[in-house]
Image 1: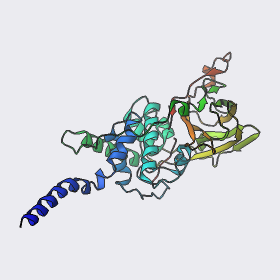
Image 2: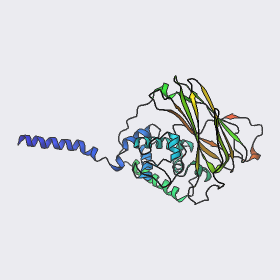
Image 3: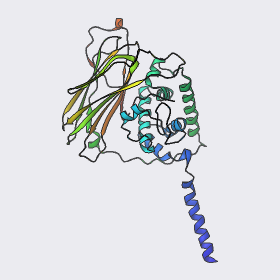
Image 4: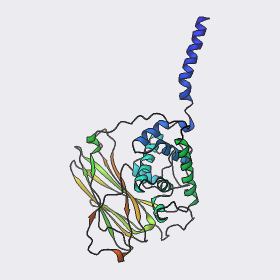
Length: 344
């Protein structure tokens, strides 16, 4: 009898210890991933969780008809810019999606609703709407959905997220392996039909040789010519169509195109240069995403990545100072961050 009673007590104790862990399903299953990712990028975990709820309903295998994948529904172009090899891996997907969301928040000066609209419809759609939430039914519904869930998860009575445990951080030496100088623009503003160049300089500040990858993801309908030159290689694209931006109330149809090039051998201490050339074809600001990757194959480290959203403002040629010289302009948002275009 005593052994039976002891066994019962032990069983009850084990149940009380294990039951909470077994109950972490559905919305609570990825709380630790969310806290880790959000805390590393200055976002509230409740916001990231709300995005996942409205994007995929916490289904890591979710796919949209337009190609968005995983918990945070990353488009293929965004995955490439963020270095996501497996979008259905929850840790990779949440980490990348959170970096992208943080980038958009900074790009739109901390305005969360504009950042959410850009996450759904793409940053260029927000520009075309006059830096407001686009008049697209899907996007407006999406912003309302995320905002409602965000406020719910922030409520005092809501189930708290798990305490955050910071992921291991890279050493200062590793973080500084890839050094990118401020971008150089040939003009302070863009003009329809006039060529504009963006110059980038990046340095391998490490002690090992590697190779580099450069990527630019841009709204194809806004330019009549786009080229990326890195070393001896030049890649150019013409617009895929002459279709302009979508009409108010229409579906989000902006198409982002991806250009990429390589630095095959990148020696330690070597400074590399790249030039982006574009010719605007519509009178509006242009936003594109630029990414540089330094991969040292002989070192047991992840590739180093610099990524930024670049905004090129438009102004009528009549307003331009003809004496203007090439100036230095840092990109609006820097760090580990993508442009993506959505979806359903």
